Amino acid sequence: MPGGATTAAARTAPSRGGPRSMSEGLRSRLDSPLVSYYLVLGSTMALTIVGLVMVLSSSSIEALRLHGNSFSVFTRQVLFAALAVPLVVLAVKMPVSAWKAVSWPLLVSAVLGLLLVLTPLGKGVHGNRNWLEIAGMRLQPSEFAKLALVIWAATVLARKRKLLEQTVHVVVPVVFPVAMLLVGLVLLGHDLGTAMVLMALAAALLWVAGTPARLFLGGLALAVTATGIALASPNKTRLARIEVWLSRACEDMSNYHSTCWQSVHAKWALASGGWWGVGLGGSREKWSYLPEAHNDFIFAIIGEELGLTGTLVVLVLFAVLGVGLLRVVARSRDPFVKIATGGVLAWVLGQAIINIGAVLGLLPVIGVPLPLVSSGGSALVTTLVALGMVIGFARREPGVPEALAARVGVVRRSLAVLPGRRPANRRTGGTR
Image (cartoon, rainbow, N blue to C red; front, side, top):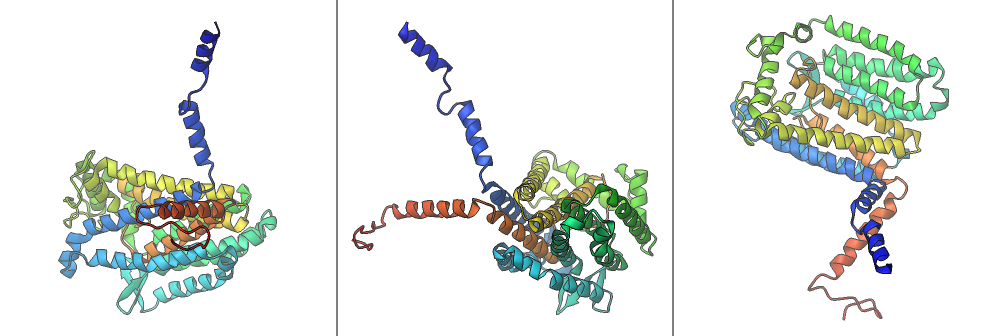
């Protein structure tokens, strides 16, 4: 019957709002040019807010004991975050040509800063001489060296991309002398963690630039040599941490050897947090049991206070940031944008993996903070500026400026019809 045929056709036809239309809508949203922009911007803002909250919680007890003010560490972190805001806005608006123009000044400034660390202006903390103290404020030039290396190497490699099949153009000047000079100056301050991040960063920049895989064998040999020199330094604590990690001595939760102290208490913090945590501000380990609770081991405090759920949220945010950065690399046609974004990706996610792996006991403790989350003004500012640069790249992807302008127009039209607003006179353009 005709009616029956119609009914059957209606049954087989996809209904509006059904699974197929939902999947197509999701696919169209993921294909939007705005996705990369929102992924990087949203995850950066979320991680920064989580970091400020957790710095306040994890540092309050130790700050009260050392400075008589529970908010001293948090206040300093907020001040650096506020300082970063105009720099991030500037980084978002800077065109690619401007980044290329400042690449050499940034590199020279980074080298001079690392040299000043070796003078009486330099300050050491826990065996690492890695800070400058000027007018009562401590700065960490090695953090600025990461940003300088990303921008400078991206500029050079983008210009030489057609010559990277030749070994000499790979080695000179990116690997030698620049990368080796930066790593060497950091190692003179006995900071193995930052030196390893710089080596990984240089390798990532070369990889994204399209360097042949065979040339990485020489780079690996140089990295192993530099690591061996660092381990042979007078700082025996670093070597002891790696030895106990290799021997799995710290897996015994009752091992109170000084080298295992941080690892054991970090695991206790994570274990006591359970699924939902003991509550924000309720950590027991931050009462001087876990050293560097607001810095290198802040992930353990997140696990203790916010539980497994809180740690998973942080991991998801870093994963979202990584997806956004990868999209920028994949969608951009500008070699400089690809290489610089790949370097920022290796810097931020690589450092996060090293930090979280050390807290979980999967990697040795080498003193690398968690990007955007751990306390540290220099690290926060430079990381935010680097991500601001990538946000600027994402804003210039094809179709993004038009899509943002359209959304702004929709918001303005929506505000124009709110109750209490007088409609514009179509004839005169004014109000009635």
